Length: 274
Image (cartoon, rainbow, N blue to C red; front, side, top):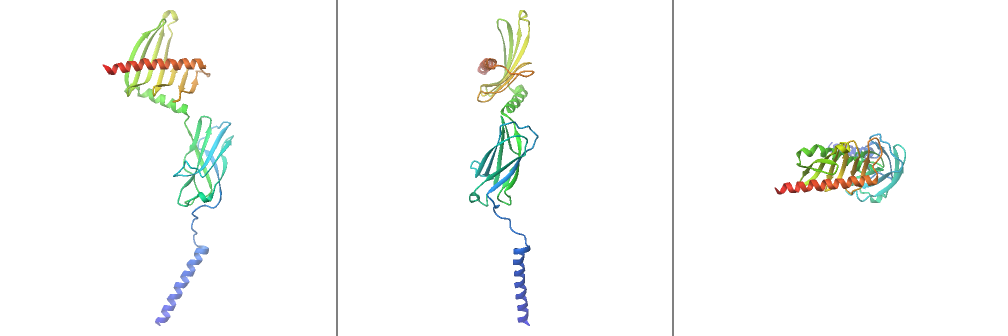
């Protein structure tokens, strides 16, 4: 009897092993491949917001390891026209892909001064990701937009800054000004001018904003609105109703801003010595 029982148990174990093997080979859940097969990644690039894309826009697509994004495994630059979506394909060398690393498609669309960057990562190849993906891009503010935003924010902050002020006259006008500084540097100057009566008595006002000791923005009340980048290049040049200042006018406005800065900075420096 004991021998029969042992034989029966052995048979059950054997059959169970066969069933497990059969499930693994036929009906069981298969393990996800460590690396998706293939040598080409394909995908679609869309924009989160409906923004018109101008002629000459360029789409740069790169396959990167998230730990080393500066060393792409593959990359391509594509000229795009018309509205998205934009299709791309990117050939890569599977021998350069490691199963325990994480890879994504990094796409950047450049349209003039504006760039569009990925809203989220678009993983591919490993950890269950395949060789097809969709990349959604969002618009990054242009340098001009960033500077305008900084100018608007600066206007709201001058109440907490050190204030200096003064007046002076010219042959045909009276000028009053005030300026605001932080950490010993002038950031904002307002100049109000009143022409003499025999010159019509007209009034004008201009606000200047500064960054790192250089003009950032000049805004005339009812007049021109000009901004400069950190490199001194003009970011925008606007006049009411359209149009722009001429190069000589922009230079004159920049020179006036520098004079206002020097006048205000001297007054601020003098006030610290008292």
